[in-house]
Length: 296
Image (cartoon, rainbow, N blue to C red; front, side, top):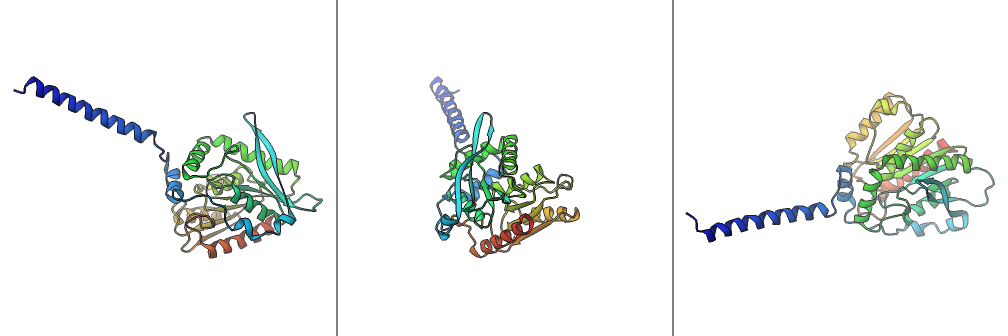
């Protein structure tokens, strides 16, 4: 038989193991972890990156002389104003076609503002919307926190997009309206088309993580679609992109879908590790031509 001292030691040891395991479990639960397969993939793609300003900010100094910029309130959500970054060509005295610019998981940062000016310089009123309520990320950890919070409130995202659309339609009297988004914003560009399937004139989707492939959901769409994707991407994968394209084609929807060889997720972002300059240049040229065709 075990002595009383040995018995007590064994019980104490077992208790410490259990407590240690519980402590380890609690620590793992309170540490920053992706909450679903989307945020897990975003962390895999962007977890080692920083949203640094890129050459986009200095490539077109002439834009300072041709584009006006301002911070505007385009609506109110839950009693709080929603502010966006508005850019438009100078010396224009008539309503212009407008484009909603939807940011990546980093938020409405300097890179998105630069792209908004670049779009406006093409002859559009460009509104960069803010899906994070005035916040943006400087670290991957903060980006994951913000995108998770946003995705957990899909109704708020839809309300935000609706307010932006109504602002351009009613306040800016835009004769035509389009949308463009990258990554997280790519999914929301498609969502904008589904929110306004008969009145949004054009939507550009750069590697949006969530693609709708159900023909029943896509059937109401009258919006022209331009899809820009990478062959090496896994969210969405080429198989999902092909299913998306097939559904649109079978419904006779106006859609142009491109999968760039040897291009990965976020290949058009110069600040990212997956930047593919040749694919990004070609995709931008297609974007300019697409908007010109359907908005001008």
